[in-house]
Image (cartoon, rainbow, N blue to C red; front, top):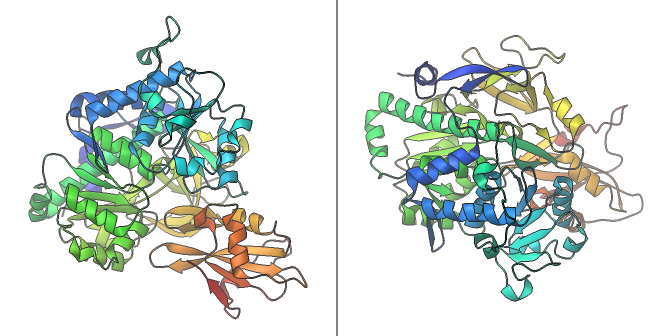
Length: 586
């Protein structure tokens, strides 16, 4: 049987397709691909030339070819330049998955500006924080999410323009007008004439591998989200790592299971991907969308909110062959009572990430998608620009208790707790060294310095590397819950709760859930003499934080919450308490 380690050695050898070498990056020796794109703009140029007439995005009744898409993206670039957006300026997007999100991404990064992906679940306060922290000059938004902040936009002096994707033309500023901020997204596709003589063209703007490409926010351990900066280097590295995994997976299947490989390759000339991961996450943007552009994939994008039957209908209609998403969505489709009413025979590959995969999930995938030849699991963070490790081929079944082996450009380590590396097999904080790493946290040098030390990213996850090189995740050193693929930092909700005038103290802990991974539970100490119910607690959080942070369970604790001598909440005691009744929602 051919192993992943053996195929990696073959594919990364001198002269091979994915040849690797070492280079100094910021004084740190890193493993890099010898042959690589120098920027995302080079990826866009390649994609348009290589795949022009093929369909790139299917969204409702819209079908957009690669040629049409990148022509429109170039128009967005020109319009942004005409609006005064320069290299390094930030352009924020606040929208559901849609072609306009993707057009804004490519139109922004192609001129060396920085795309800021705002979480579509965020509330007013969270959105305003992201805009203010990033200093976005332009915002592209859809109606639903813009409604959350429309009354505050005029006071944001740094925000010069807002382009609405879906709007009434009567409510926006006519193109070329001065003074007001609100424009149609269509104005980005038809830029007005009159750019300054000798204005810089896209080709004139030099883009270096180290230049910033995007800022994506990850929930903060101290209460506020932190903007992780991906560079052109880190995003291109992730892109080529992902293409490597696809190539290696196909080679393993052909060598070890030739019959399955033949069936998997019979689906047509153009791979079709069911696209469900949010574009404001690295899995949706960096991996699914950017990789799809390079690989010439047709992306079948769900309109609006994810629903299992909508996903199944799209698989059947578009003859989707691959689906990369979060375990929560896989569970929901596999548990749909209507799953056998749809033809899912074209799906041959399912990928997901975030945690070791349960045997039951693997079984349900193969029951729902009978022709699946390969499942893939991966481990990564926003700070690593997506996956750092991968589990493919027979390992996905035989090593399902791990999150796999490092990507070719990744070095793994385990901290010894004293700025050194632990011995083999020891358990400690997981460290990652790679060109994948973020440049740092936007406007947060102290947080950057504590997270990246001597080229190592301190992930906040606890685990060990076994004798065969597989990474096992055993715990989190950060106080965090992963709910349906969204990171939820407990302190953010705790800080929100203790602002309530009738809450004396609060603790947030995770409750295991089969489909979501974990649910959020609040343990509340009520101010003496006051009363409070679970619905009031949830309503308080819902007004201030995104829906996925609202506690599903609320427990009212009798007496003071347990803390140690230094004041730290003793959550191990709270996790073991079951005497107090819980209230459930949703």
